[in-house]
Length: 264
Image (tube, rainbow, N blue to C red):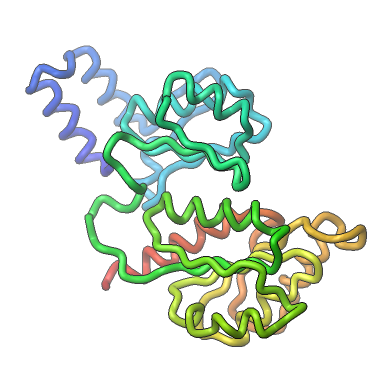
């Protein structure tokens, strides 16, 4: 929702008698500042109007009460709320006041949306025409894949998923070359030797975002070896995000796809 649309909704609420003058003044003050202050955070309500995508809550290291108070700010302002790295305690705390909240325990995503909304896509109503593909090297990469896929779907993107297509058996990824070639962006999630993004990039004329995961034995150093391998890949056009950062890859892919689709 743009700032103009938000102001219109506030004024229409006053005109219809659904919103008191005092509450409307408070809402307009929030809109003029652009953020709401809680006991532990300043929640940015204008992120979407500036960047095209809403603010996202990193739940890890936050208490359940802190996450709940932040989600309530979004809910009170009719904004979609996405929390990453959430746990069961965060979910239970938010579910008390917001029963419609959903939780993916594998991808660790916590999501609340205003009634009637199905995604946080842009307010223009323009129909999306392309898709983003997310590829994982192995089943152990599933949590990071789920974080990326869930984020992209909330942002309104069509997502194609290719699971368990690592370099130990290259024919598995070769079966999906056409699908990846026609994608707006391809996200590749891999641990161990981190070789898959380089292979994928060498096969297609599509931007590739690589996500190293902390999957592997001791010498993988918690994903550092995969990270370094991806940074040193020999196929041009691969961008690399932080270890296990499926959300960061999804956010970048959504921004790229959004710019590509602006003129479609």
